Image 1 (cartoon, helix red, strand yellow):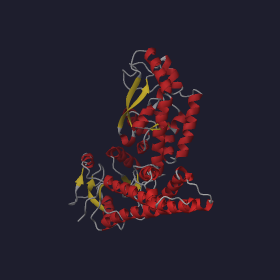
Image 2: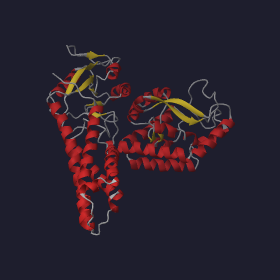
Image 3: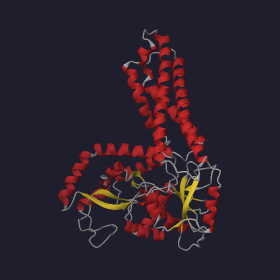
Image 4: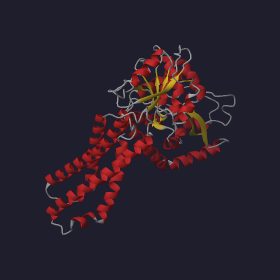
Length: 475
């Protein structure tokens, strides 16, 4: 009988606490080694326990492990508590230990007076080896314990297969017999309109029942298994599944827009492709978020005088609020409120949603200047801090226009894999769109961005955005 899967948050907490403990042990043992090295070099009169009890070392012993947790988070190690390979775990631990050792040495150990350079190298190497050994020992123990429970069927991944055809049943059969580390518990199948259902005693659900299953926490993963290779059908399913907030995977039978550029997650197990995540590493995702928060916070502080002046000018330019908010569709198709300096008159959309065009009479005189230099977008740094947006990512659109875009470009659904951005490759290459056709054209650049996401690409887009702002080519 299948066991119940422990929650990802509990497993993640185990890794965090273990890393904190093991880093503390490694650093404590290093301080013992450090004492004897310094004792030989300086002939200090302090005893070992007196040395370890000094205020400086006690503070280091407390803060170093805590600070290292930030580095471990940046490595992306905690993002997927279950879905990680042994090799990936070991390589991540090596790089984290190496970078952590260098940072600790530069921040703390360069003050230790040792005349011989070779001793400094020995201290750095010792710190690295201690961190690597204890950190990996703790991680290995937790991971191996989880693998053993999966193999013993005490834990399992509660899975729903979207599709109720014979092909879907074959997928479920392969999962049940899979030799992969993760065990799958098939809760049931979701019927898809137009497919020929297989009628047996297995549990079947309608698409309308799936959200409640996910809200109750009964579903850990969704696998799409449809008849044939109908790409548009898969994209329509994705549009419905993204808001559920659980991993979405598919067998590599549907190619092109759906699977191109998307990373294969598990080589040893079933070759499913994760459709809910972009083509980038877990470390890159966390670094991107860290830089988003850092630069947005700095921007809001540094630009606060400009923000204040613009707010006064907007208030005096025409009746209405200074900040204009509007509902947009963001990450995993979740709605959020986007903030801008108001650049139009208050009754701009009295007759319904409309895209702005050249010479649009709804734009205020001040608004034209704000839009030309994209100053109206500055309040969106607050959206980035809140986690609604990123500095770089596909521009968020309104649900009204998304419905029209997907009629021409069903692949637009894939942009929901990432947070929308203040700027994007589409904005840099194409600029503002004044028609649905132009929005579709701009979407092509956003889709290419998803397959080439990196810190370097984001940096280039930011540079081009700054150039666009300074030259006044924002309209």
